[in-house]
Image (cartoon, rainbow, N blue to C red; front, side, top):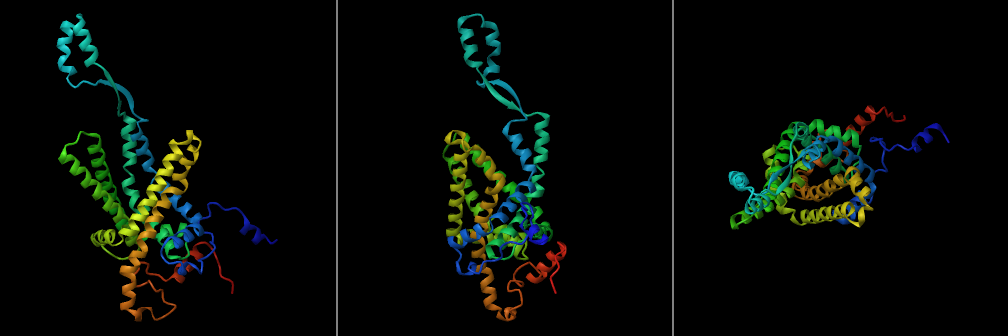
Length: 356
């Protein structure tokens, strides 16, 4: 066996740019439903794992925020559960020796354990806030990889990720901040309304926030895919995504149900079966879970975008696609280089020389 063949057979877990098995000729014949999803997911499983690594490492400041919210950096303290305790203190001091006074003091002074933020907590909150600046670019880079997998194109995870980040960071950075804030506000509203006592008005506002959160969740399927595919303003991306959230409702809801099913399984891994599957429950988000969720959303979104935006353009401008060597999505796509030029760039970057 030659030295070159031995090197090719070597185990390279983190070789992000190695050649894959290629694009299956059957991909185009599998439609846009479950068959194609599972076929592409299986054939690109390693690339989806690499994408999950980008998502976890790219948004590493989020780890500090999770630690701060978990209470690990906070100090234990206690406060009376009875709100009027401080107003009754003079009465207790005057009659504390009587049986009645001691009974009232014991009942009103029942202590409740609370967590008090420390200096380290605020430091971790500050580090976690850096997620505002990483969230958008990381989502743009991973959306580009997952879109290419859904399309059936050759994928070079490392090169494609940074290619998409460089091309889209001016839009992805500000939108990532907006995206995080919208999600944080909606989730915070729902949480506060659930834990507080509710009247009719609060219940109505709760369900309004739930509906808005679901609608925005569907919009996010399409936002980053459009960002890496078309040259559109943020306003137009928002507008189109709201329309697609309704047009693609069937695909959107199927992806949502699949994500919920995976979350339920993850919860069972962590809290069920006596902790036997806890290691798998901890490892899944770090290895495959986040990118799998993202791929479900991208797969649901891309083919609806193709049906509504790309295919009609091609039908109206057949002269732009007459040349078979011409990249058939070059005009409508933001990628302003042909597939051959992109592959040549990747080969040159990695020192790959074509044989004469």
